[in-house]
Structures are given as C-alpha cells and as structure tokens.
Length: 199
Image 1 (cartoon, one colour):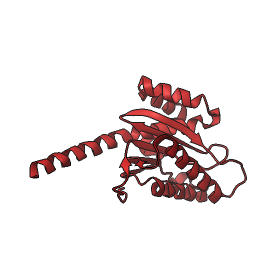
Image 2 (image 1 turned 135 degrees about the vertical axis):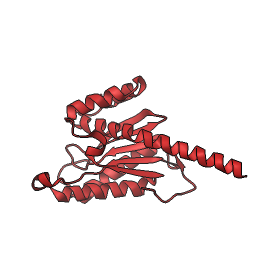
Image 3 (image 1 turned 60 degrees about the horizontal axis):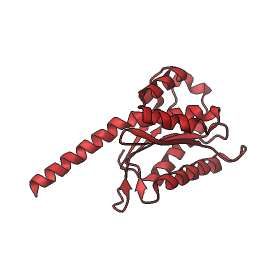
Image 4 (image 1 turned 120 degrees about the horizontal axis):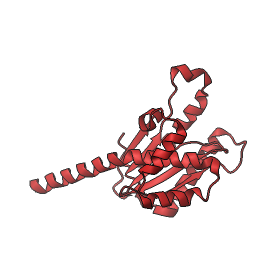
C-alpha cells in the first residue's frame, strides 16, 4: 500500500509495530536501519480501565513521542510494517471482533501519523506461519546479527517480562520487512539510472 508523499519529509528505515492497546500488554515496536535493529521497545496505556478509544490514542501518542525522541520531526519511516489481525472461521466464536476492529483502527492512525513511503499490513500467518510462539521467537533472535541481538537484549532488560513477546514480535515484523526495503532501494537506483540516461 502506497501512502501520499510529502516532499518536505525524509524517509529512513523500517518502523514495525505489533499493535495493541491493553494496559496489560500494550504494543511492541522496532526500528531497523541498514538491516540492523537500531531501537525497540514497548508502550501501553498509563492505567487500566480506560475506554478503548482513549487507550488507542495514548498508545499512538507514546509511539509518536518515542519516534520524535529518536528520529526527530522531519524524518519518517520508509516502510511501516504492521501486524494486521484476521478472524479465521473456525476460531471466530472465540474472537472479540470489536477488538480486531479497534486494532485496525490503531493501524490506520499509525499510518496517518507516520506517512511512510509504503505500508505493509501483514497477517500473523504471513510473517510467522503457524509455529508456536516460543519456537518462533527463538528463530527471530537467531536471525539477528550480534549488534542487533545486543540492542534487543538491552531493550528487554528495561521492560517487564510480560511485554517481551510484543517487542520480539515487532522485531520479527521488522525482519520480515527488510527484503521489501531492499527491493524499494533497488527500484530507486533503477529509476535514477534511467533518469540519468535520459538526461
């Protein structure tokens, strides 16, 4: 999905978000640049018992503030990668479809806020298949280079263990998006080369 361009903004790297707005787990996020994990973390509403809408806006504001602290106001991600939940028919009776709708709403707000060059909305089965969470998390960590592993370790040491899975999922989403960023870069080089030949 392409997003409207703003010529005054610079686009860099991949921002990946495992979306959520509950007080008990919240959302995980990660930022990759040049194929490496640069930052990651978790955010959640300040207190339980808030309305869904208030919690969604609080998560959005916290992710926005974190981004501004690390990247500033004039830089946006090249790619925004978001997990997009779906309802499978055989699980439908056990799923709160209102929550799924609110997750999609949060994803829409994140897209509007960050104005990336491209948005990847991926279902859980698209980016992680059907492997057990623990097994898949081990694979994610093994896929990281030593620099990125250290970044993840430093991050996890500062947040409650019950939020670790959100952060690791966000890191996995970022890894999933790397080939898309590489393809985007190749396409830009091709267009630049073609423009130089035609000038």
